[in-house]
Image: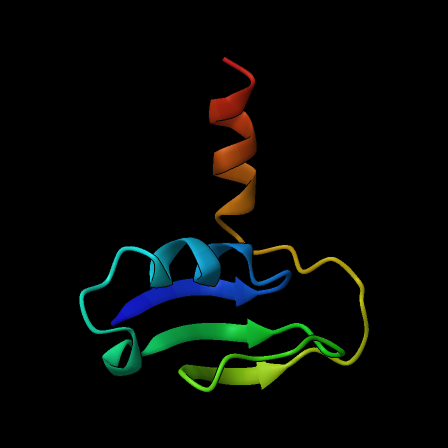
Length: 69
């Protein structure tokens, strides 16, 4: 199982799937799935976005701060 905050372009999934021994058994879980995207069959998500607006998570502020140092 792999957990991410959002499934957007599919880039993260494509990188992770290359690294697993049995790709068909991978469960990819996200809080949100970007609307209008093609989803892998292994994707389980909490909610689909309504549009293409950027989703800002509370932890994004912390990540931004670390990248500025």
